[in-house]
Image 1: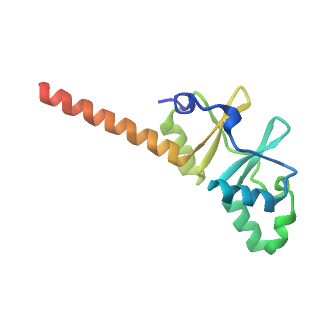
Image 2 (image 1 turned 180 degrees about the vertical axis):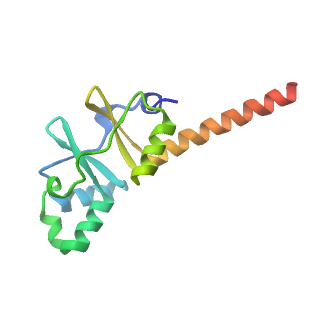
Length: 143
């Protein structure tokens, strides 16, 4: 299954994002309020990076609460690791495993069109495994 199939039906306008100039404290409140682990960081219409719970933890450990006053653009992970819409779910899972990340912006022709989590990918893979198992059972029963 391709990533394009996974994000089909999702409107890119439904993706929660933040801006490079947003205060870290405000974005942390958004993460907590939406119960999400990361946000794509935008500079205008361009993907500038990604801001995750880990970015907050690392900065809090280094700087304490002073980091909450900084701009997200100063503390985000950049450049963001992305995946193309044509990538396979297994490829994206492998990328996340190798890079030890849990969220990926999805891009097409250099423009972000989706945002996926490792949970999205695991669910898609599990659904596929269930379908394959059902097909195998059906084949065996009719053989």
